[in-house]
Image: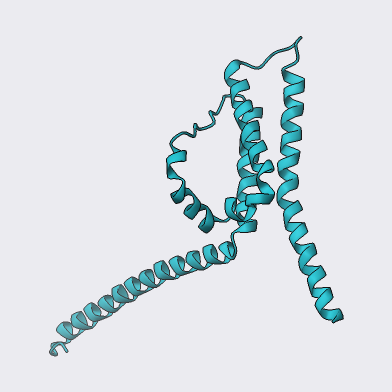
Length: 177
């Protein structure tokens, strides 16, 4: 009984840890984005252009949407297999989505790349066995390429040996095998 309770507690802590490991960077990115807006878009400075502000607003909306729907859709939103099935089901909605425009401001580009990094980490956390699957496919591809190369080199060496034997046999005056 005690062992079953210990395993249950360990699995619960692991689930919470995964939840926090994925959700905390999203919250931190939103905090940093809001701080950037407060510093750069105050009434006396207003150094952001309208395109930069629009890019930040869209990124903030996407970030808020990811955070808000995280608990309800985390296994679907970040699991590739379930996400593809969901996107096929709601394909008509995808045509209405406008992409977030990138700006030339390097700080805003850093926010965009951090957001994509957070989504990639969430993807790897909630798609079961995806790292193993990717590594296995990579290993299979490398082994296939290596075996083709080894086979090609072995055939080339065999051909060189045959040619050398033929040349030696013709030089000695014996018949080729």
